[in-house]
Structure formats: C-alpha cells, structure tokens
Length: 156
Length: 325
Image 1 (cartoon, each protein chain N blue to C red):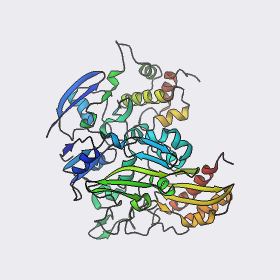
Image 2: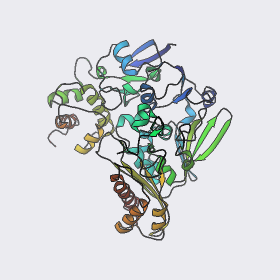
Image 3: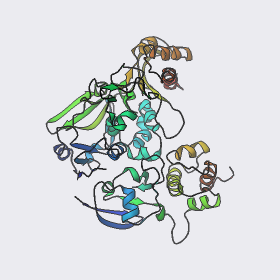
Image 4: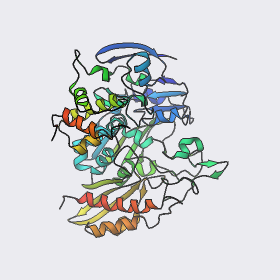
C-alpha cells in the first residue's frame, strides 16, 4: 500500500505517494526528477548516491523514501546558487578532481560534509573523510587536491 | 525487494504492539544500513516493517556517576563524537569511530550494531546461519578466510558487531522491551553461538525491541583496536577491546574481548589471567596477546587471523594505557 510522504529537497517542498520499498535514490531520480545523485553499486559501498539528510551525508541507496518523510534533503542540485557553483564544485572543476564524473556528485556531497566537520583537514583526514566514496578513474590524488583547494589550502 | 507494510509509530509502546511473536513476520527498522541490504537479497522478507526512528524515548546519551545510558537510536557518529564517551569509555568511542565511512556512521545506530546479522557470505547467499547445503557444512573446507577461529562450530560466522566486544569488556547490559514487559540482559549473554538453524545469534525475541544500552561506571583504561586489510570501507579482520582496572600502575582486573574471531564477542580469559598484577608494557601486552589465542582453532584458510587477533589484543592494551601514568 502506498504511503504519503512530505519532505523538503533543496529547500523545496515535495509531497508524493510512494511504495514503502521505494529506495530514496529511486525516489530522487525517478519521482522528484533529480538525477544528480547516481546509482553505482546500490549496496552502500560506492557512495555515488550520497545526499544530505538533516545536514548529514548518507547513502540514499540504503534508505527508503518513507524514512525521509518530514525530513530535509540536499542533493548535488541544491549546491549552486543563482548560477554560481558552490566553492567545492568550483574546486573540483579547477583541480580537475574527476575524469568520467560518475562518482563526482557523491564525492562533492561527502566533501561538503568533511569540510563542515573539519574546515582544514590534512591529506589523511581527507582520505578518511572520503572513504565511503569510490572513484575508479582518478586514483584520488586530484580529488584530494580539490578538497584541499576548497578548504583554502591549495598548495599547502 | 518484496513489498511490505510500513508502520511508523511514535512511542515504544505502539511499536512493540506492532511486532509479531513469530520469526520472519516483522522487522524493526532504525538506520536500515544492514536490514535494507538483507531485504534486497531476500534474506529477510518481512511482511511488516516497524520504523522506530520517530520514537523520541530511544534517543540520547546520558552519563551519570552510575554509568552511561545509550538510547538504541544513537548513531555511531554521535557515539564516536560524544565527549564523555571519548573521555571515559574510550573502547566504545574507538569502536564506533572505526566503522568505515561517515555516511554509515550517520545512519547506523547502536541498537542496529548489536542486532545486525552476520556478514558470512554463505549466510548472505541463503545457506543459513550454519552455512549448510543438504546438511553438509560448507565452511570448514570452503571459503573460510574471514570466518571464526574460536568456538569450533557448528556456527562459523563471526559476530559483526563493532560495539559488542567493548560492551562485554565493560560489563554492559541491554534493555529489551516487548508488549509483555521488559528485561535486562548482560551483553555477554545477548550474543549466542547457535547450535541449530532455528536459533538466532542474539537472544532478542521477534517481538522485542532493544531500547537502550546500560554501561556501568567506567574502567578509565579502555581501548579498542581493529586490524583491517585496508584503511577504508571494509570489516575488520580481527579486533580487541580491553577494559582495565588499575591499582597504581598495576593491573588489578582486566577484561579482554576479541571481535570478528567467533560467532560471539570472544572473551580471552587466559589473557586476563596473564595480565593480573602486571604493569602494561610491550612485553606483558604481547604475552597477553599470545595467551589470548592459545586455544584458537583456525580453519583451512584463516590461520592468519590467529596472529592478527593476538596483535589486536597487544595493541589495544598499549592503547588503553597510552599517555596515562
């Protein structure tokens, strides 16, 4: 039986009827039309589906949409304001913190979380902060550079 | 995933009334980090899911002179960051912080950590807790790299709980609530090594909810050390939690409990005995580590875990006294 859920995504209210078994990532992509969060492994390993739930980074493939009822979600689409990229997005652009780009939405959301908790992370702290996000292209170095740049520590 | 009915109670009393006494009918949903993957794989196919995340009374960490009360819904992130836990219950904070990825720590709850199912790939592949095929045990001659080195079967999975060893070392209890009332169980007795396929690995009944964890006033010297293949998203290969009561610089009482080596958090009585009356030095810690694995019974492909468990005990002991006179 479908359940009614009401939540806010990127500041906007959404109300929908969903099956309880619908995963949040499928809700975001197929019902709300937000295809920024990606489906990589769907087993909570790769982190491509990372979004903010109540201000904390979570994997939206291992959560039901009904669990987000009454909650606040931010996806990658919610970061750029008035056409200007978020500083983390800009840093990934400048430092070329991506190759194919598939993991990037999740990497950027995990980076937002990391810098929120720790504004000046060391290299090791950056790598630990991103341990829930896999990238198969970059070898991570450019991603770490991008996070450092975003933290205002480029070249440190 | 099989469809299910979703219940969203706001009190514990309502929640327990929604649970069925028979196994397999209903499941309790908190963070869902384990349950949802079990449901995706059709290992759990509940008819009804009872979401407990909106139950206020299951939240919060409360520290008092008598000890610590941790609500079942406290996340691993909250536990790892809590100043009181970090200062006085370090073995718990270490174990929570060790759970890989901020995303999992934000969702995963302490109650879920204790109630999660084993990671044994035979179990996850549908061969049951005892991992048998037509009555034949699959683990002893199978892919047993990550299986138990203690216990001797018939269950060979390892307890997946990160907090279990630390809570056993600290003598903690859990409160289990059903529609009929509540009971308190020592964490030590909460975990069970099943002898048959009808027994679960924890004593929680299908119609009960684990509501809180009660940790007695702390042994100031405690730590958890996990050995991993890599410093990223993975389960520990072996772990140890220790809690020491000191008389000056000498160990008056030690609790040493290993994780990921048996179907339950495994108490190392020989290590505890070896430490009595000793100061913790590299040599005494190493000797305790060796004593801890004296009775290990590794399987065909996991003898390497004996050494890792021994080292985990040694390093946890050294960590517990680090920076303390």
